[in-house]
Every structure is written in C-alpha cells, then in structure tokens.
Length: 294
Length: 295
Image (cartoon, rainbow over all chains, first blue to last red; front, side):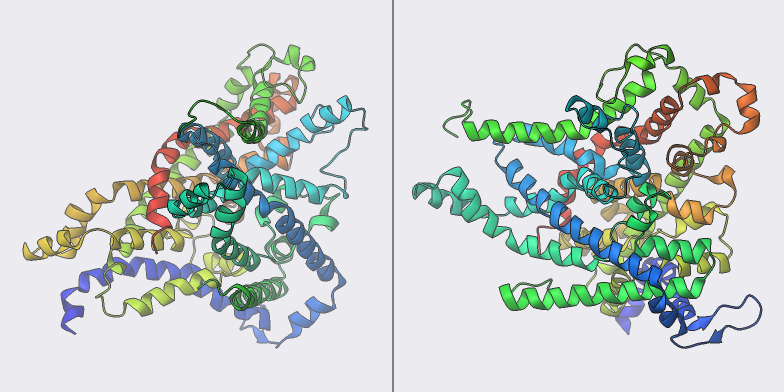
C-alpha cells in the first residue's frame, strides 16, 4: 500500500494511455456485439443471435471474397516471404560497411511511402500508354498489357508491389539476427576450409532459422488480412471480383452500404481465424523445432 | 581482411544483384520526376523508361503549389502530423517510464490490458461507430487521437528505459526528486535518440494517413494531402482538384498533360518523407539496438 502511495504519480503517467486504449480499442471491441444484433437507429438494438453469421455463410459472394483472400495471401507468402531472407544473406556478404549501408538505405525507401503513393507509382509504371513495363514488353515485341484491369495479372501486381515496398525493410530483422551470430563459428569454419558459400548455407542460414520461424508465425496471424491498403488503392471495377478481400468487403458492406452487423460479423470471423492460425502454427512449430513464438 | 581490394567472382554477383535491386527502387521514382519536369511540348519524346526529363519546366509544380486545394491539404497534413507527434511522444514516453518500473504494484495487470489490444484489433466499422458516438466525427482530432499511443512503440520505450542505469534513479531518489522531476531532468535528456526513433515512425504514420481521414473527415477542406492525392491520382477524380470553376479560371490546367499533374502531386506528397529519410537512417541503427536484439 505504501508503495502505491509513494509512486502514485506513476499511475497518472499511465492513465492517459489506458483511457486511450479504453476508448479506441476496448469500446470498439465491445461494439462488436452488434454482430449479434439488429441495428436500429431509434430504440435499442434487437438481439438476433447468429443470424448475421448465417447470412454471411449462405452468401456466395462471401466465399468468393474468402477465396480471393486465401489465394492472395498464399501467393504473397510463397513469393514475398523468402526475398528478405535472401536479401539479408546477400547484404551480409558485402564486405565494406559503407557499401552495405548504401544498399540498405536505398532499399529501405519504399517502406516509408504510403500505399496511395505506391499505387500512384505503379499505375504510372504499368500504364498501357508509355508505362515502363509495357515499354519493355514493346522492345521484346510483345503485345502491351493493361495489368491493372486485366484479371489474370492483377494479383501478380499485388505480389510485385508488395515485394517492391517491403523486401528491403523486412530484411532488417534478419540482418539483426545475422549480426548477433557468434563470430567464432565462422572462424572455426574458416579453419576447416569452408568457402563463403558453405559458411552462408551451413552457419548463417541455420542460425537465423528461429527468426525465420518467428516472422513466419506472425505473418500467418495476418493471413486473412492480405493487405487492405494495397488492395484498396489498386482495386478498380474491372478487377473487383479477383482481388476483393475480406477487409475491403468489411469496408464496403459496413461503411458504404451501412450494413454494420454483417460487416462486423465478417470482421469477427477474420479475427478468429487469424488467432487460430497463429496459435496452431505456434504449437506445430514448437513440436517440430522446439521453437515457437515464446 | 587480407584481400582488401580484390573482388572475387562472387563479389561481382553480389554487387550486381544488389545494384539491380537499388535500380528497381530508384528508377520508378526518377521516371515520375521526369514526367513532372518535362515541358508539355516535349512530352511526346518521353517514355516510361526515361529517368531524365527532356528539358526542365516547373510549370506544373507552380500550378499545383498555387492551387488552393493542394495548399489547404498540405497545411492540414502538417498540422495533423505535428499535433499528433507531440501527443504521441509525450504520452508514449511517460507511460513507458512508469511501466519500466518493475516495482510498480499492478504493473503486470496493466501490461496485460495493454498487450491484449495487440492480439484483438477492433474492426474499422466498430471504431467508426465509437468515433461518431464520442463526437469526434469530422474533427481533426479523430485521426490524431485514434493512434495516440502505438503499443509496439510503447513496449520499445519500456525496454529502452529499463536499460538505463539504476544509479541515476537511486541518486535522484536520495535527492528527493519526485517521478515527474526524475523524468524531466534525468530520463528525458538520456532518451533523445530513442524518442527520435519512435518520433520519426510516428511522423511517417501521420503523414501517410489517408484511410481514417477519408472515413472520419466529411469536410473536404479538412483532408490531408494523401486523401487529395488518392482522389486525384488513383480514383482519377479530376474535379476534386481542379474544380469546375477553377478549370475556367486557369485554362492552362486543361492543356497540361494529366499525367504530368499526377506525377507532380505524387512527388509533392512524397517529398517530405524523402527529406526525413536521412534523419531516419541516422537514428535507425540506434533504433535496432534499442528494439530487438537484447532479450
């Protein structure tokens, strides 16, 4: 008790943060009860149980959205996840620190740009009329392609723009992990005559596996997110059916069409799946390698 | 290193692949700048692969920077970013200071309440309903306050404060300083680099804000630059910038290639980030040390 009295000032330091979290996190979480209610402008909302979840799952449009989300996430994990690892290993091989810093600084830039800007850049680059990519296709004698309205290509645009934005920055964690590897391991490997390539494959890579597993599990937690800001800014009427994901669906149904309950139900479904994914990969990873998130 | 200046075959592969990466990052940005700067008469000479403008003409930059909508949005962005930043740094660091004291009764319960919010994030719809209920709708404060404290940065700061030597705090206690004085006279001067790091990340987050601003700000004169950029360059609503009266006012606007205008406004929006970038890099190495490695 005397401790509380002595340090009462510290509670005042924390209070604003707690009030903030209460208003902007806990109150909205509490508002999620609307998923089980019928929203009424006048008068109290009426409890309807799982009605909106039933509507959601009987609605064929939602399955398309779910399918898109899964496909886009799978494509992103397959193609974007390994690149920061390869990049970190490559950067680690640059022997001059000043050179390495130069490469790192440039490669970090896109991470700090908003998706609005990045979409603007990609729209310009992929433009059918004098866009960089179509200029290259022209030189190679291919027909120009309008990538952003072509439903076969638009998911790949998401993958490539994701790589463009985050490959550099996402390598930061791996670089930090590589730097903390004990230098003696390399010294003894050199005595055994290991080449640079062998050192990378047999020392560096295995030593950063824990970091890779951690990042992978965390990524799976965002599996059903699939990048709202990116899709939202690169989407258009022609590609809606191919890249409409749960988050854009939540936004459209909830805020544009005003169907709050249905939209919140979709959001809850997404959050639940994310939580299950992160917990199950954590336990599987722990079983297999002895290392999970904690 | 024994062979300091000789480069082997693998070095060549490593350097050329990294240069290729750098090229892929820089080239779209330079191409965009080339579009913005090439005079309209020469625009037919320019294609998507050029990185240098064909001649220089700042007419579109002048046009954009004298456009009232752009100016208002630019001011809004600056206002939101600076007001937000002050609140962010102040509240994050005082809370982190208090939570770094492991003797504080109830600390674990408070930390659990805080960390819980990282696991379960509310959906945008429920957040919107709350913002409406508490009367922040259509106010700048909605987009400033909804990210007043970032829980990740809070934890980063807690870790940083924990590493400060205890001797300082013992000395302060002997001198009879209360926690506010300790924070102000001892902690603050010691944690400038850490605050710079989270401050820069907060700044970028505020500057890049568009989605919540789009939803919470009904009044278009309150829009930050990113929302204007989105309407103009992505949604393609030309009227949002060059409203119809304005088209009549400066007939020039219709003559100028729309793509030049888009490239220009993208550049105006990303320029402040490029200005900040060297500072971000400078404090960044300190940021890693403060964040991750030590368990």
